Amino acid sequence: MKNFVVKTTANAAALAVAIWLLQDITLTGADTGRKVLTLILVALLFGLVNFIVKPVVQLLTLPLFILTLGLITLIVNALMLKLTSALAGAADLSFHVEGFWTAVLGGLIIAIVSWAMHIALPDED
Figure 1: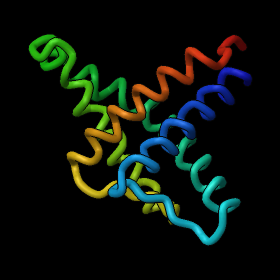
Figure 2 (figure 1 turned 135 degrees about the vertical axis):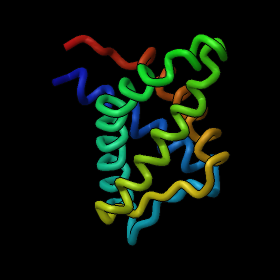
Figure 3 (figure 1 turned 180 degrees about the vertical axis):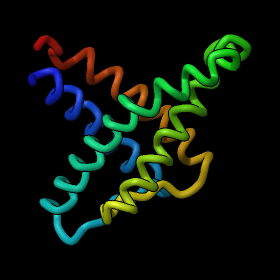
């Protein structure tokens, strides 16, 4: 359970940094409490997408991972962020990623911040 909370917190922090740095990744809400709740729900959704969809996409694009020496990971991360944005829109959450290149940069920011958060936070169960 603790590992789940740590991963969700890291995802939420990484998403918050991407939202703060990039103007085309938006999270809107009436007040701060509503924004925090939406951010946590989007972090849960992002974690679910990364848990279910990302391994399948990585397996299907394995030759490209080898060919590009792993740089295709940036594209896969961008696609996972765009999928999260589409699912958040379908779930009536006010989170949106505008444009593919914004998603690539957002995916890079999220990967770096999430990596740093996983190092800083304990992750044992």
